[in-house]
View 1 (cartoon, rainbow, N blue to C red):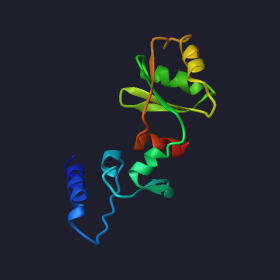
View 2: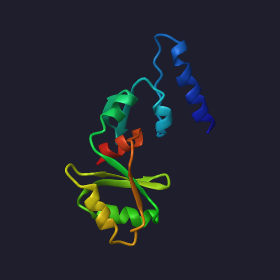
View 3: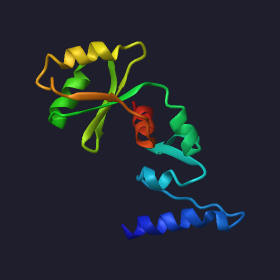
View 4: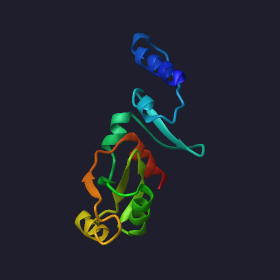
Length: 137
């Protein structure tokens, strides 16, 4: 926790300094979002480099979140549908991305036939975490 606070202070003060580069390696996207430029790296491979805002703005798919059912049951159901490109836990909700051309209404009707029929599905705004998860697919 203290390291995270120190990193944030250094990143926020970078504008006071000129002609310096600060390299930060962090799994915390709220810290990464404070940087001027960032890179997603997995298994030693650079997947994407850009500003945090550009990365989020370039999210190529519609993303939704679902809640109101047991997280693991809901993830299992979402991952069983061919229309779902990616599904993962995100705090107390599930985030999922549909394949191009998939219809959310059809997916909602399919979920209504499962034990998670009372789930609430809403369109979500992508985050840096979502961008990273989609790159890993």
